[in-house]
Amino acid sequence: MIKRVLPKPFQYFGNVRFFLFSLCLIISLFVAGIFFVLYNRTNDLLTQRIHEQAVSYENLIRHTKNWNYKYGGVYVEKRPGVESNAYLLRLGMNPDLKTETGEVLTIRNHAIMVDEIAQQTKRHEGVNFRAVSLKPLSDKNTPDEVEKVALKAFENGAKEFSRIELAGAHGSFYRYMMPLFVEPDCLTCHKSQGYKTGDIIGTMSISIPISQMVSEISANRLLISIAAILTIGILIGITYFLTWRLVIQLDAAQKSLKKLASTDELTGIKNRRQIMKRLEEEFERASRLHEPLCLIIIDIDHFKKINDNYGHPCGDQVLRQVAGRMNDNLRRYDSIGRIGGEEFLLVSPGSTIDEAGILAERLRETICGEQFGEEPCRFSISISAGVTTLLETDSKVDTLIKRADEALYRAKHSGRNRVEVA
Image (cartoon, rainbow, N blue to C red):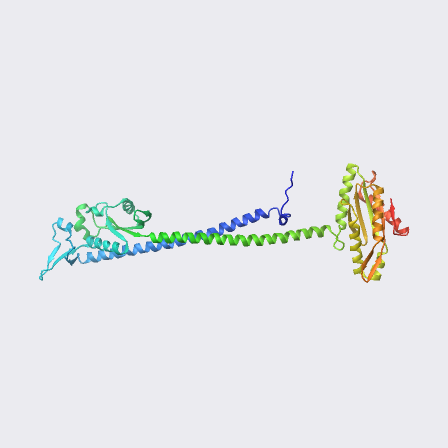
């Protein structure tokens, strides 16, 4: 089975990937939400602009119609292309008037005037409006399906009606309607239909072409989508980069703290707490499996004189060099740590007492065969060592340490620069 190895920055932070994913998702949703609001707000403003335009047309038509009401209609010169009001003719009213100079004038009531203005507006601006009713006096005032829906809504109390029709046969349109109420002047023509003052007689239906607005909305949607994607990408990139850098720094700090917690700051080998922990682990394992375990306590001879004669910085340098030399001459599964001052503890699992004695002797010879310190102050030193092995009667590591310490004591008092076995 292949063991999966995490990338370096995630060695101590297994949840960082999930955190980054969650953070990027939150940023994406937040930015997308902002742009979604902006997009809807822009669309609402465009729609509001068209709505205000429709209301303006409705107001203008209503004021024009009221002006016509006020004067009971207006007369215009009957030129070629100007026809008499056929509806008034059917009612038995003569719409024409001949002047003393021989000119013929024909009356334009509010309905035909609005119709002619609508035709001119449609030719020049593309905006179409017309009066429609559920009881039309003319076929051209018959409502379509949308207008019928609006008229039903007005009968149920609606104040206005609007709808957007996209991509029809003649393009896209904004449909807007407001109810038309029966006024006293209206009864001249519509009394026979059963209307009374205040009734809803119909609606003024306004259709404004919005193909350009639809194009603007589409372009706006595209621009906002691109801006949102770029913004999300940049924010996620920055967030990912900064978070990654932070994780790397935290990972380095974690490793540094772990190393400081287990390493002697001066010599770089295991500190007292860590080597004692290793000894406890090996003691438990060896006792359980009945395997050999040896312990060596090493002390630098006359170390106090080094500090007194050459100073503490030199003494520290000697400690670093001695620790390094001994560590370089150990087996992979041996462990050495500094347990105080110039004293070191070496745990050698799987070694017999003879093998541990040979190891201690080799370390002693290595140290004696080299010079320590720095130029111009270089000198030779020696070490003493006490060696012991795990016995069946040993119930705790303190017993093992005590025997090794006693062996070291004998080595010191037997002239130093020697190895004693207990």
